[in-house]
Amino acid sequence: MLNTLGLYTETQKTMNSNEELLFKFYTAFQTRDKKSMLECYHDEVEFRDPVYGIVKGVAAKAMWLMILERGNELKIEFRNVTANENEGRVDWTAFYTYSKTDRQIVNRIHATFKFKDGKIFFHRDRYSVWRWAGMALGLTGYLLGFTPFIQNQIKSDAVTSLRMYIKRKRMAG
Image (tube, rainbow, N blue to C red; front, top):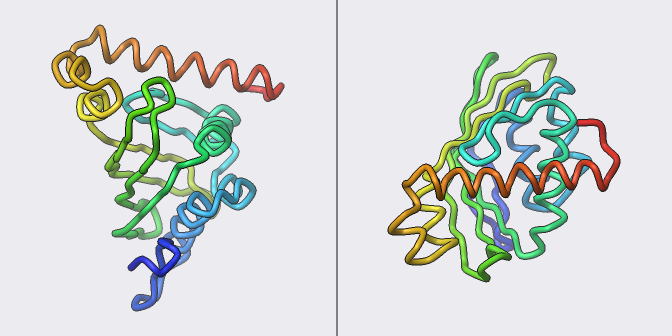
C-alpha cells in the first residue's frame, strides 16, 4: 500500500526477518538512504540483470550508488514482498527520465533474492530490455530493441558507465 508520500507501507502482515530486509532495502531505495540500502547487501553479493549482467561485491554496491546519484528524478514503488529463510521476491517499478534522450521510463521489474548471514547474497532483476529500449530510444528502440546489436550497445553503455564511476570514486571493483 502506498502512503500519501508515495512510499510503500506494509501494515497488515507480520514480516519475517528476510521480508524485513527486503522492505528495508526498497524503502531505503525510495528515500535515497544509500547507507541503509547498502547495509542490506552481503559483502560478497552477486547482482544480475539484463543490462549490467553479473556484478559482484563492491561493484554491485557501486552500481546502486551510481543509480541514486544520477537519478535525481528517480521514483520507486514496490509490492509483493515475500521471503522465506532462503529466498525472496519483490515486484518493483522505477520511474525516471533517461538522460541520453530525455524520455520517460516506467520500468517494471521482478526481483528474486537469496540470503546469507542475514543479508542479501544474490539479487536478480528481470525486465524486458526491448520494452525499456522502446521507452528510452523511441521508434528505433521499439523497432530494433530486440536485436543483439541494440541490446549489446545498451549493455556496453551501462557497464562502461559503472566502470568509470568506480574508477572516479576510487572504489575497488
